[in-house]
Image 1 (cartoon, rainbow, N blue to C red):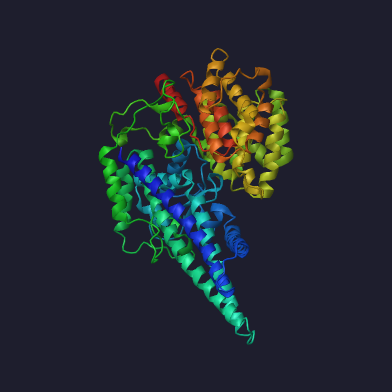
Image 2 (cartoon, helix red, strand yellow):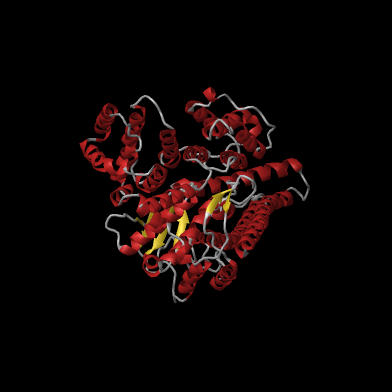
Length: 619
């Protein structure tokens, strides 16, 4: 299909441009030595070169660090700097609720955290994704986009923004912007030296000082100029990649093309915010009138989407095939990393886009309306997550209610009581989906509000004296997606290889293999180890694969590098799909492993859909 070709081309061009950007930075560092060499009589001095290069790198890194500190607030800070306001589902208009439904559908299908949605009070038609990681990402939409775009057009735009999140474009943009900001510091230092020389009086070194100041100003200005050109070129390629991935994900590129046509027909589509020029690369289309284009021409984007539209076929079902270990999986369909070998499209029969049941339809059929509404409110969402830990024993439930009242007060106890019946009727396969739906609301809690809730949740989990797999997964998800927002030490991949954590990886895959059943556990482990290029080994004893042991192993494995994290998740999925059946507990453990390693992986939507289909048949 054409969108696969477009994705590959965009990735290749991005890699080339990033290499050129790095070379540009290296040339800038080398050029700073030129005035030093001139002042020393034109002689080459390796030691002086190393000192100058080290000092220049330090200055650039310092400037980059300052810029990075300004963006440390994540996507929320970017959205608020543009005048964005969190879109509260309560009191939302029909158009706003439609947008929130689309965002939820795309989040659940892609396995990404459901991001908070912000509305910018502007009549232009635009959207953006911002944040340092998927866990602190937010989506922003202008009022014009919410009111003007049809539902399928919104799906295309949302899928485009989710692609930016999945491909790490936000992080790449921030790094490039920080590097350019660091180079600009050289120009500022040169300007300061030039200004200072005016008051230093005449001296024999004044000529050399003026030469250094002028060179620093020129090098900094020219370096920043070319850095911005390369940054804009990279941004344009990432826009092409996001368009192609959105077409792949929705299987309906014409929707995205229609949204672009609508924007192209608007006479003036720039935002009124004064801060938008520095954040232009975050947006769906250019949001500011700048001399340097950070987005490709709209007509070119439309042309490529129309090419994809003429060859796109929409899958009707998703199935499991244990015989194909290299098939692109669900996450591949979402435009992310291929971490789900074995899960593949079972049919490529073209069908009408309108014939495919939307995830919104599935959600509203399987989750009661009061529960869906509760998931969207910070206060009620706390009750929903607490009820996910509820025990079957009445005495334990009474103890849990007392713990809730002790930590959070009688009002939340009342909410828990009100939502208890809807939660009891919730199908087991939808519980993890409900947790995902609660995340944006929980992320709105302040530190003082979240801390007592976190303590209450932990105490409720421990109330029956044991921790279930679901409870452990819930706590892992909260730790990754919410706890990290309230601490100053976000997760960053380490530098260790999988070989140095061989025992931890073996225990993790063994636990997953045992979860699928003892009859094929060894075969499942062997398939997972093969994906790690490890030699076949016997299973770790089931007695050693407790949740405590898995938790400890996962804690050790956060030290491995990013590529190794993705490789380990691929191995986990291969282990899960060895027998051709994806069981709920297996999918839950894989989800927890992926969350613990900060790797995006889709929900087992095929389980949700099959559960929905079975319920429909029964009714």
